[in-house]
Image (cartoon, rainbow, N blue to C red; front, side, top):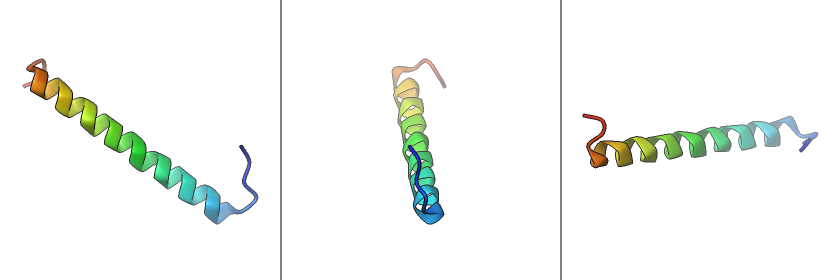
Length: 38
């Protein structure tokens, strides 16, 4: 997708980054709770 408004594009990128960080954080917690990672 292409957004002519740079500010809007920046906002979407930061939002995506936050979502990915949260997803990675949740995966790490699940792995730790499973006992695979100490």
